[in-house]
Amino acid sequence: GEALMISFDKDVIVESIHLVAGSNGACGGFYQIGSGAEIPVYLIDAHAEKYTKFDHSGMLADVGVVKAGQMLRLDSGSLYDANAPGSWWLQSMQVRPLKQ
Image 1 (spheres, one colour):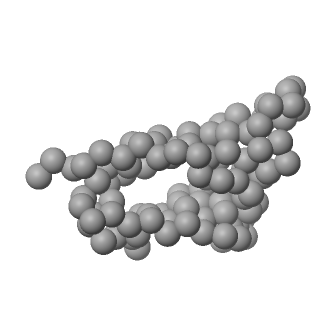
Image 2 (cartoon, rainbow, N blue to C red):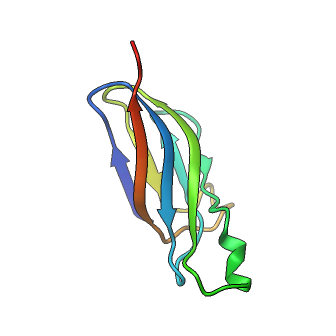
Image 3 (cartoon, one colour):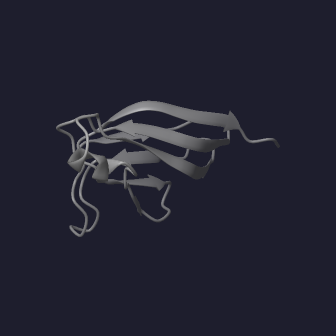
């Protein structure tokens, strides 16, 4: 899969990440902050395909603190071959500076 590696020059809180899989996309992959745990990506309205023709999209909420220079990895690859890979794009990310 493909991965986005994002870093910041200040400590930030990543409040949310909005991913869009589209009507032909797949909901899967993972995200990781620094060397922390890899967290599976589950787009919450993926089940909607059965009922609608709308694009799949989902919000990752309360992602966490990313320290200055640390990497936030958004990866569409399979997590430990246990979860399906994803096929999505980053629509938006809500970030705010961490108060010192």
